[in-house]
Structure formats: C-alpha cells, structure tokens
Image (cartoon, rainbow, N blue to C red; front, side, top):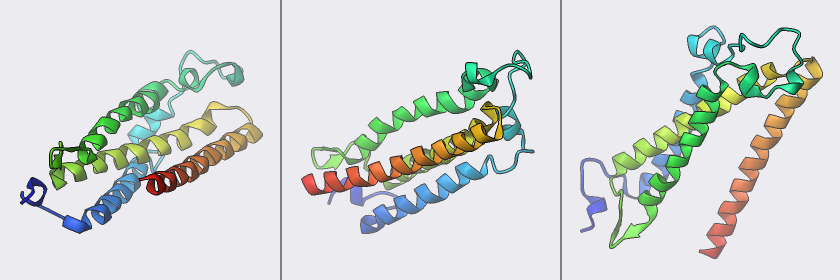
Length: 168
C-alpha cells in the first residue's frame, strides 16, 4: 500500500476536484478581503504617498511611488508567491513511489494559500491601479489593460496546459 493512501484524510480520485474547489473558494475569499473600500486593509492599500503633491503629474511616477503601501501589499506578496513553484513541484514529482509531499491535507493547504494569495493580489491590483493615474480616460485605459492582461494570462495558461497534456 502506498503511503499516499494512508493518513488522516485521503481524497483518492476526488483529489483534483477537491483541489480545484479549494482554489476557487480561497481565490474568492482573497478577493473578498478587499471588498469594501471602508475596511482598514483597503484603506492601507489605497493610501496615497504623503510626499506626492495633489498637483504632481502621476504619469512621471510609478505606482509604487504614488501609493504608500503598494510594495508591501502587491509586489512583495507577488514575488513571495514564487515559493509556491517548488511546493507544488514537491506535491507531484515522484521520489521513489510517492511525491515528497504526499499528504492530501498539506496539498489542500498549499492550494488554499495559493488561491488566497491569488485573489488578494488580483483584487489589490484592480483596486489600486486606477487610483494611480489621473483622468477618467487614463483610469479606464488602466482598467482595460488589467483585464486584457488577466484574460491573456488565463488563455495562455489554458493553451499551455493543453500543450503539456498533448506532450505528456
């Protein structure tokens, strides 16, 4: 009997469905964290840099300069997500008979964390980016650019998955 079949909780053939459900729910939860602009975390993300004058041309400054906490709430968590690559790899790459991480509960926790961070970072970007530019047309353009990048990423990921599926 494989060690992946033993333990407190084992999902068996249901594991992919459970992981997808956990990712979707935690992604939704991550987006809900910034649901209201009156909540403290939303206010922190959207807090303007006190050094920026209201008349300052925002086009000359990057988002990390316009918003005081942008690096803390967007860039640092975004780069910290790179840690998920080796964690996910340890869940699927076999060593001997089983992957390094063979516990279904740990896999679920990793996917939960990945989904939560995904929802939070996407929501933080969609909340913050339009506030970093001046003028309605620029705000609209920045929102549309975010949507384009999101859809291109989803489409590219889907096609990459198809190619990997065909090759292996």
